[in-house]
Length: 235
Image (tube, rainbow, N blue to C red; front, top):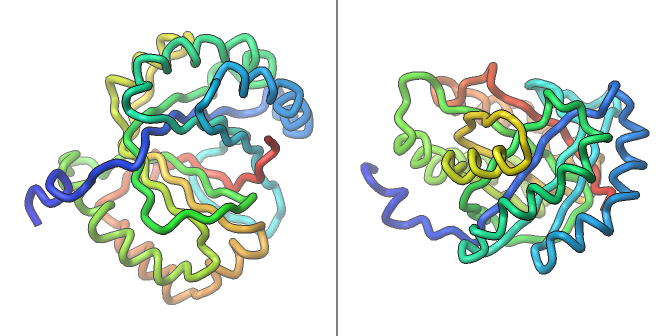
């Protein structure tokens, strides 16, 4: 429906996400480092809820897309948006020795909780762009109004949370500048939460349902742009 997204979608919060690879590819060192700087990151975030995760490298996992080894997320009210660049700038000395510099990407946008949120320790984090030739408005309407209604029943009761972050490029560029990295263009940052890896694998075990999800993404998501990993929370 034309203009449907703008009429009905009111964000629950905003979300900041930093995605990166481990320096030298050393994921165990990344995990230990993130645990070590977790308290300083929390102090810098003040009242913003945080989630810090590291990629689960179990051989049964195939999430597709480019590699990502770790992520730091902060959730905040839109009224706090002006505070975010200073917070991001403060993250640089905490993360620069842990993350491969060229791998770090930052995105910010309004977040929509697509299912009632329940807590879990395993999160599929992924970022992607819209398919070439698709307008931002059409992509957002499809993702919010159609794709969620296809994916949620397939993934079932084990899906504890599903957050869509509709990336705001201006805010993302400002945060990238504050951290000191090049801006990147994404349309979407996606979070889906499960209790653990086993719940995730069970949730994705309906081959026909997963094929239906994949078909719905054709011509809507620019697949080569996808960056994703199943992560477990470390802080």
